[in-house]
Length: 154
Image (cartoon, rainbow, N blue to C red):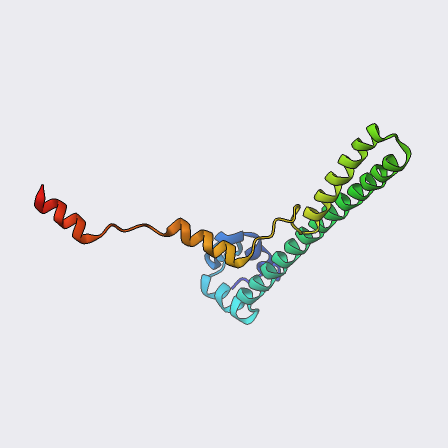
């Protein structure tokens, strides 16, 4: 009887979502029962789940780090733009200072968006929002007697 090599789990795992004990058995010319017994002893299912979970966590962490790097780079650029805009405001005549003021305003708005705040202060009270929703959904209902009377007369 052939012995299943120690790298059988690696082969099994490398098959991806379509992996099967039967495929491992065929690869190493052994029975599926022998592969199943080895898989139980070595906890192949648990190991696959653990490796896939670690891979997902690592991918998620890399996404977080990428987003943080982008955010940091954007904030750095916006702060540089703000510094230049302030410099233009202090050194230039009023006509060209308006360009600095526009650049400063734009950079401040973008900075707010980057750090997760609204770009403009357009807060609406809860009461106002509810009132507007009521008005939008309310329908004036005609009197039933008037409708019935019109049908009877006509």
